Length: 319
Image (cartoon, rainbow, N blue to C red; front, side):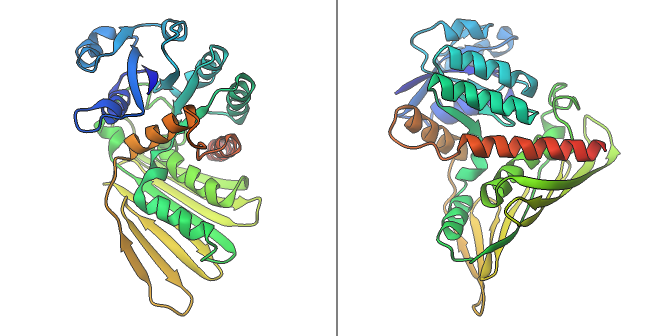
């Protein structure tokens, strides 16, 4: 059992804790024993209910020898310094997305964890959706032939429903829906196509915060020669699609549980899968890697390539 601390116990931090040690989702691999919040009175009842010792400073959990791993659900601009501090303390660290806002900071975080010999995990729970796992298997088997193009779309209404000032600050969440939802698509595209060579992006905004009406659209050229597109909207009902195209066919992940495979000369095949708790699944994978039972499925190189593309998109929007 990996003993962990949760830093940042807001809306998302509480969802993480509930996924790991809720009444119906109690993990046998990981548990939270400590928590850090700058507003302790607002979360005291929650932490007491989950058996979490609460404090206000990261240093408190870093000095605790019982804590083996730290989960960061904090403002994005704090991630790099917090990851480096965790690594220096010898703690494995799991960071909610985005890992950083700049490529140089992502490189610093990855390097610090590698130098300290601790695991770095990243919050990309969409990879653990059943359709995304099956999409990965289809691509890895070479069913689609030579890959040519990738595209993705992720939209939801979370920004308006879960408003907080830091999450909607342009310095913390640039390029409209890129940071909150589009980063999941970006992670997926990079995982199939590799690092981006060039991007061209636009943001169109019709209404400001706290209930924005805006879109972000991105056109990619990847170093491996693939093309790609990304789109995200912060005011429309949930929609998810990752579509990978090759010269022998294409495979399209829709929502959490549906996959459509189209191969040359054959009728399309549509598959549906049982839903899973993707938050619980990603922390099971993290705990297994911390304990040495499995290899963590996302490399440091992928994390850096995703943030490099993220930074390029933000620069393109501002240009």
